[in-house]
Length: 459
Length: 47
Image 1 (tube, rainbow over the protein chains, first blue to last red):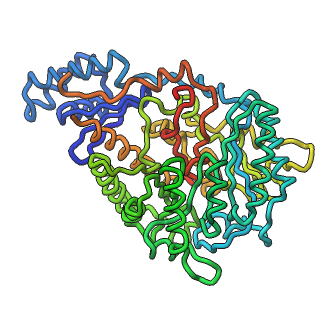
Image 2: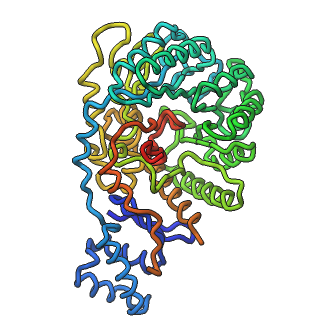
Image 3: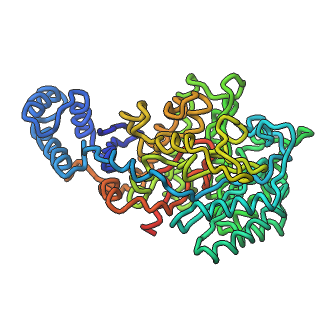
């Protein structure tokens, strides 16, 4: 499968199965398009004859021959229309150990963000529960015990707002440090916070102990404060911006993300990304909202043209700033073409429900943070000896790009790995039915990131 | 090849031979909590 597209002045081809990206002139683009539409191999003599006949009024015959020779050479080298022989690799993910955990240390929150998938931090429960240190430590024991030979173990302190339970966070970190010596493991901690309770002591502790910090902010003041506000209605922007700037600088602009959400109410979200860059942040992630489709801020199919336009506007500015020496990273445009993840990881993605789990404050175990509070997806509890629900686990384990019919012919499948399983399950009721709107946005982001690679590779 | 510039090697095919160690970061642990973005993660064995 070869996916071709034009963005700005670039004609680009992605050979899906080899992962090769080619930048070309319009003639080569037209030839590949011809081969795709007619389903010809470039080596076929019939293809050559029909191609010349098809393009003879637009191009010189010698030029067509030269371009076709180049395309044939790439085809013969396995860099265009290469075969998909990865299906066998799906077996390699079976019975994989657990290596990552989202630890919900707090189901309470000091903000009332309108779009919160966590039900304003409470995850569909009545009270704002905090995790005890005992449960947090049990979670670390559980992770180590089920991690097999994996050395690197990841724990994200999540909520609600984890800083509301920071003493427990510290106790769990210290306990895990003891475990890593005893069992030869390497814990990597992340904390995801809205920033309201950050202070110098907490920043110091996080910098000394956490490999990553995710700082929630949506962008421009009016955009952020419309969605991210306290119980009394006051916005969070003025409080968090100076604190986040301090965090970013104290971590040398590395190993953190300012992370936000865009909704139907700020479809011009490229302005929010640029605003964050102008505030001095160099690691930025802004994602589409995931919410009930009936809300007035949910994204809809009719919004896609505007969203695509915004991604293009953003990538243009992203490339421009990198070229000028004042660039920033946008999480969803980052693609490592040479040293990215192996195909085995790309087949099944985040590993939720098997490699990656979430633990609620009461010790209940779920496939990932988005499933927490959805009882039908509860996989077990840390407080009994019953172990995990193997039927549920097996369902998640079998989730990969080959078991999702919609992924079969999609060019982006090895970039998104079949999309977010939680979105598929919770929106479509079927973990093998990817969320269409998310797919369309993902495909656009892949094209933009490949365009950025092409533009930055210019001589 | 004067009309086509190839930006990278056949990295996916190569990774099928040496990949699968499972030591890499889980995507939702970095910055995506509501979508699935995998291709921007780093391979640990290439570090």
